[in-house]
Length: 119
Image 1 (cartoon, helix red, strand yellow):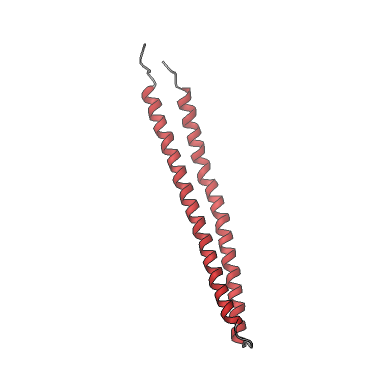
Image 2 (cartoon, one colour):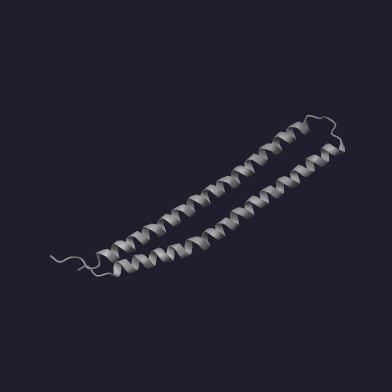
């Protein structure tokens, strides 16, 4: 039985494929953590808003300053929600831009490895 002359090249390509897959996994973990942090930010802001509304609603005769504070809080809440939504959309676009080249590179390496002769 003769030695596989492509074994070293196959081993090198397999290591490169594993490296690309680790990069894909690391990016996915980063993306997921960032998305969770955005949602946590939104939830915390909503919680603060609910507490403030609770305090403001205790006054049976709110003055104009309290009403203005309430309106400002709702406006800020709208902007926070919009910021989070836009950030999630931007993250999705960036994910596509990062994943496509990694996927293409992995597929190229797999094809190259699979094309090696077994001798």
